[in-house]
Amino acid sequence: EVQLVESGGGLVKPGGSLRLSCAASGFSFSSYTMNWVRQAPGKGLEWVSSISSSYSYIYYADSVKGRFTISRDNGKNSLYLQMSSLRAEDTAVYYCARATRWYCDYWGQGTLVTVSS
Amino acid sequence: DIQMTQSPSSLSASVGDRVTITCRASQTISSYLNWYQQKPGKAPKLLIYAASSLQSGVPSRFSGSGSGTDFTLTISSLQPEDFATYYCQQSYSTTWTFGQGTKVEIK
Image 1 (spheres, rainbow over the protein chains, first blue to last red):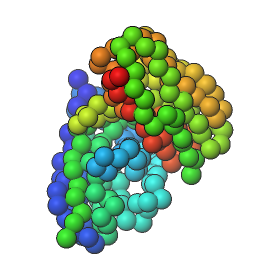
Image 2: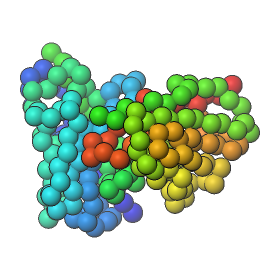
Image 3: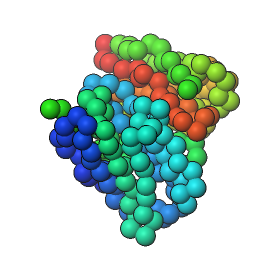
Image 4: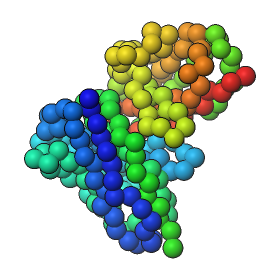
């Protein structure tokens, strides 16, 4: 069974940093592209970032480019999102999702990040 | 970025109704269009990929159509468990974008 479990969310002050993690199991993690998608409270889904299976391709939404860094450790079956210079508008539930080149087929349950003073 | 616009933003329907949700892209995206269902407090679930392919395990009352810029998600006979928010998503570009969502509510 495919499982994705996010962790690392919490309350952080504006301008602060936070690192999210996603532990994957039940599939060959090193064979899949992975994505982060977020959802602000009461709002829609926003794609954040994508990293290919062999780290060859990394993409970011314009809203986080230069502030967020996606990475992965295929040996640990883990995906990460290093977030810095956080803003109030980054407040959201952050989902980790397994992806093909074209769509996300499995999602974690999400971790809440709150940016507030 | 490619903008995705869904309509309507919300709708009220009864069990057994046929429901149609549309999604329009700001430029052609071929068939790189997916549909997700999300229930409150839950992660999104993939329903349709590549515009018209049904994800494994998804009931056949869900169907998708379209190509280019205009796409449709149809629920042929709405069931109680289908009340949720639906999102389209394009993967034509390397930076993906979602529609704003369509909330399907009970009439």
